[in-house]
Image 1: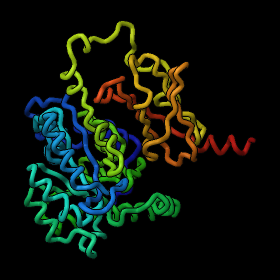
Image 2: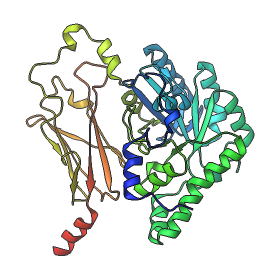
Image 3: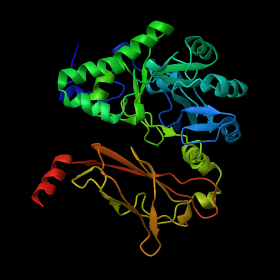
Image 4: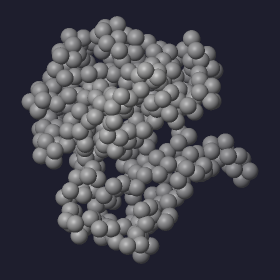
Length: 389
């Protein structure tokens, strides 16, 4: 088995999402709408009786969300159409959402599937194969085949849904152990799904959104066209194939859905010409973002900060900050300095992080386009600093 891509091949795979994977004869033959706005929604479990939780959403809420999409004219497109658009082979509606569901709980079939059929919308289920057909809470093979006949599609969510501690443990055992681990989790699950359902599996959702360069490179190497994170942001046409964004839709937090469908085109169309004019002299980005975008820092508990003084008519009560890997965090706002801040209250354990800051204008119902920036942790420098102290 091939181990991992070289640094140069890894760079090409991550930086060139289309040309690195397509043969010359497969290149785009139509002019796709590269500026289309797409949000990918991530659900887990459904219920019509139990209380809502982070991962479990009431079916009447799901129905209301689909009704909202219909009322706003937001198209629901299939995952396969999204991938065809990225490959330069299909024009898609804009704005649009893709509905994805992780794990493979039986309630996808018993509770959500009837709602999807009612609205006639496509959806995709990312399955971790050790969970399929294993008891009364999981989808059976027969149920999955019915979903596939009713606008459903499938992708891989690994073999065993490993937690970060398991990934770390295998990584520490050395290159061969980690390579075998990746083969079992990512390649064997792909093959199992292809063998059982007779179709190519080209999409993978990282369990818990956890990934690193080795995991991403391996996924691209074995044939996944898109690997999905849980970074809550819209997905542009040229998004790196190993880092596709998704909004997690929490059953007990309506703002997660509102953030996901806060498309720029909808906000513009709902404003008067006077409202669409930007105030003169207002910069596109805040003058201060901390840590600086794309910087490498040594602190494992940094202060995340954004200067919002250029954001006219901001409603401080609407501020929401999310951090990849942490989710929603408690953000504070200082009216005098106009700074939105959050001091990370735990050690950051991954090499890369993305911050998403959302807000509404006073009296508005729609969200402004979020501020998004990323930074990296130099974990070696952090430990060096601790040892010096």
